[in-house]
Image 1: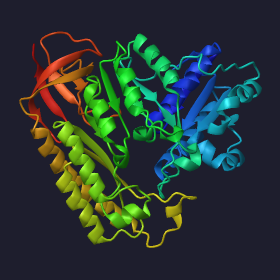
Image 2: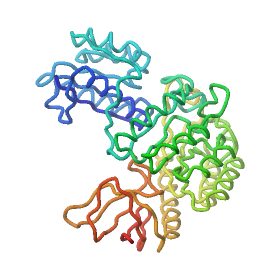
Image 3: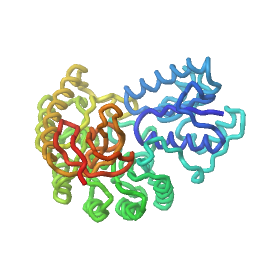
Image 4: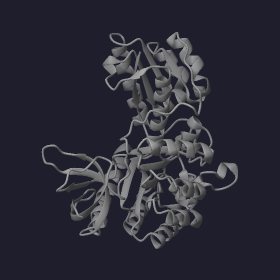
Length: 432
């Protein structure tokens, strides 16, 4: 029996996909990358914004047509199914099983019935099947989110924040390290609030324990909300030498009226203050953020305030989205919607500004020697591709391209002197 899986959406969804593959492998399925070879195909969907929903529907339709000729079972799970379960069941009878997120505790029953064989799931005992590069893996430390931003459907899909026990995370982390993982990337919808749903911030303690794991070389944190980055978290990042000074802090906007409408905690002044705190502790910190343009009621003056703030803060990395109205969220019914053309114009203006800022920030690394994790080598040019402090493994941060007089192993760490920069990429050569 062979199973193939298509994972859509974010890295948090990818961890769910890896768990799914681990369950299938534990039930004697062979995991194949070529879907044409699969007896069973699983699609793990995203349902966060309109573009992701459209991608999910198109993928289901494409593989439903493929199923007519090649495979026996088509199973669809994930956020899209959780959000639109009955509509999907009614519209797409070609799918053999729809598994909502809330159904995961009984997925053994669902799959046993649909696959016509006993399907066993023993939680915490079956290792997930890592799909990232062998030297890098994600460690998901919590499920759901309790922030209730007015534009976001995540709490509707995943529920409130539920932090996983530290002991369970450490068992998983040690397994990853034993399997060759050298970069542990910590993820959740809001990593900075890990443990607060249980009454106490546990992120500093978790970092202390992860830093002790011998196999790890880098520990990277993603998705820290600016209002929850405390001095205790900064202290923990500072004292644990494996933790990279890389801060992914989504701010979404810089106008206080809009931040309040978004139900974002904190103000523009609070964001400025936490950035100052970060740079005082880590003078060479890398700051990444995300921003929404075209939120209902956003005026030209408020957008200009955002541009001015971005120019002031000078984020190293910045991603932006045009506002996507999501049904059942508070913002969905807000008045004064922004025309599509206006949203797109503002998006392009913001990204043009950020392009100049990114280039300016990258120039500060000229002639610096930095540590780089080797990712691959171009067989024609013999140029290596790698990642440094600057780049998370999600293909949005750019990379380091460099030459070496020695043959380098994928997943190894080398020192590279930077001799050229672009807006998002660094270029250099290895040094002894």
